[in-house]
Image (cartoon, rainbow, N blue to C red):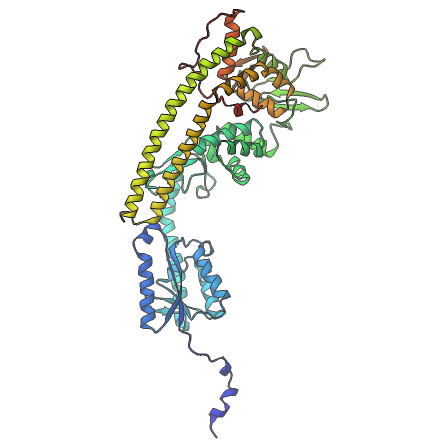
Length: 548
């Protein structure tokens, strides 16, 4: 009787399986340059050659892109590899990696993950370049040493590069992609059109709109109102992104970075908001505005954030003395800089709101001067229309030039002169976006030109009732009227109780000048204010601008 008849009782006999020859391949590079220089193809070729020499079959390939190894599960392809290993019913015999550093550079984390694959899931790691494998105990030790060595190499590199990066930051430069509203020019940007010998961070079209958002925030507007107004101007921004922007000192020219270890430096880029205004916004967000509980949407204080102190130039804030039920505007920087908001039985002097209503009353036009005002508006709008025609022609020329460049780009790609499809798509998208933006501007200009009579009638109506609108409407309408007439706000001399105005909307300036100069004359010939006058700039004459 032989021993073979007792083999079925031997421990481990039921676990003997047919040899598994299926393997998976994982490839990775850490930079775009390595991807373009065929490094990934070489890794795949080497792995397949290894399979051929060792009678293995590659059934799946992962990676194929550039991903940083600073964190294992921040890599999408690596994460997909591990997840599929764990859920696959029939596990691969091994994962082939060209060099073990491609698998992980996290040190202990990489070793733990490799050990889990081998011990728990029975999946080996094989380093193709050396043939090292976790199949044997000695092989495991070699592979784990390689993972630790990769981590050490990373640390050695950091010891060399971090001081240089820290110095770069201390000089006011930025690392990585600039926040929304800015374009970065430098030596490492992806868009070749923005390559530059030194770093430059400049405000783009989105940034110019976000600059308005900071102004609206300082005036007390709510975030949902700001997002709506930005959307009307063509910029969509999520509430999370807007909330994050308010807390980011980058926008006031201040650089903070974890690599600076708590140090704060001035950045080399244009700010969207002053440092003082940035800190005021922080006070607004924290609900602790200089010790006063403020509500800038309070109907008793529509001028909060709109009027400036004539002495120091800072914005006045509003507050309420609850015991008295009285509202005030206050300059936080000038001693004794306070004024009552409303005229009351107990107040000796007129309130700031009442003084502002009187200021608006100066723009009321007598009925007998309506024809003169209408003629003046026609002259002004016609000049603006001529300017719009010139602008439209310039836009169309720019559009034709871009369309010609786009056509050349498509032809070059079709002829095989551009190998990198990603660069082609990026350039194509950039051209198409610019052409789309120009089309929007042309449509807006054409709309202005075609609605001349409508604009004049609407301007007449609003100009005659501007004071009435401000006094009788809700707080949002009041704010829009204020911004419409005085785009840059007004200063208030609190000691003299007198408003000082700077820039006035062209419509209302024409109104005021006609009233002042006519002195009742119905025959005074109108003067064309628009011919190069500063009154034209930034007026915003569409009906939607009035918001009434």
